Image 1 (cartoon, rainbow, N blue to C red):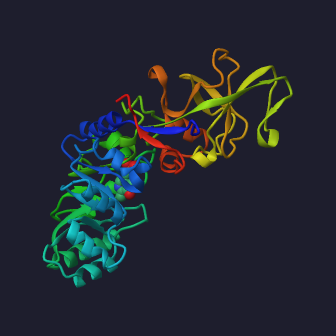
Image 2: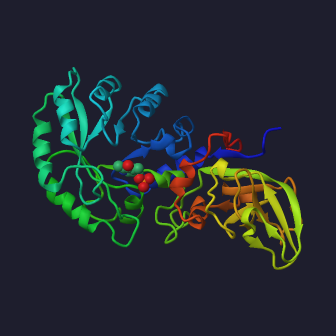
Length: 367
Ligand SMILES: *Cc1c(COP(=O)(O)O)cnc(C)c1O
C-alpha cells in the first residue's frame, strides 16, 4: 500500500471561484492565471473548470503549448512576454498575446518575420519596479510599437504591488491613468486582491482582470479577510492519515530538538506528512489541522516525512484517522490553506506551489 498521503483538486470549487471574479468585475473579461503549473494544481486538472474564462495567462511557453494542446483556441497571454527572439516564432504559431515590458523586446519584434501581426500588452511600471516602462518612457514605447508592421493591437497593462493592503492602489492607478491618457487600447490592471477589494473604484474596472490566487481558494488579504468573507472555496486538499499514537506523560517531548514538552498527560498522533511533501517546516506547534474533520493543532517540529498532532481532546480518533492538512475535510469541514501558511510565516500561494512531486494528485472523486 502506498503512503496514505494525497492531494485532491476540487474542480467545482475552481469554477466557483473563477465565477466570483466575474461577479466582482462584471464588465471585465477574465484571464484565468495558470502560471506555475496552475499554482501547483496542474494545468491539465484546472483546465476544464476554467473553460468559462475569457483567456488564460501564464509565463512559460511550454505551459502555453499545453493549453493549446488541450484544445483552447481563445486568448493566451504571456505575462512576461518573450525571453529570447525565437520565442516570437511560437507566439506567431500558437497565436499568443505577449507582454512587452522592455526596449529589447521591441527590438526583437522589429526583427521578427511573421505573416500574422501580434497583439501585445504594453506594460507600465507604475510603482512595483519589477517589469515595465517608466511613466516617462511609456508613450515613446507605444509609438515605436504602433509603427511596427509586426504589431496589430496594443493593450495597456500594469500590476499593483499593494492591492491587498492598507497602501492600496490609488497612487499606481493615478500613474497609470496619466501615462495612458488618450492612448487607445484595452486595459488590464487588476490582480485578485484588486478584483476583490477595489472593483468598485472608477478606472480600475478595466477590460481584462487577471484572477490568480482567488481562483485557487486563497484570500489575498488574509488575515484581514478569509475565504469565507470573500465566498471562495478551497480548491486543493492535502490529506493523510494517522500512522501511530503515542501516550505522553508530563515532561515527555515530541520530535526533533524536543521543542515540544508535554505539561500534562497527552495523546499524540503521528501523521504521514512532512516537509518533503511540501508541508512547511516552519509551521510550529499550534498550527491548525483537522483530524476526522475536527480541528486540533500540530505539536513539535515537522520532520521530512511525518508530523505530530494533538489528539488529547479527540479520544475517539487514532491510528487510521483521516488528517486534513489543508483544504476540504470530511463532513463539510474546512481548513483554509491561508491559516496554515500564516502559521508558517508565509502565504497560501507558496504552499500550493510547493506541493511536492512525490504526493499523488487526484481529482476529487466526490465531485
Ligand atoms: C501572478 C500575476 C497575477 C495574478 O496575481 P494574483 O495575486 O494571484 O491574483 C496577475 N498579474 C500578473 C502580471 C501576475 O504575474
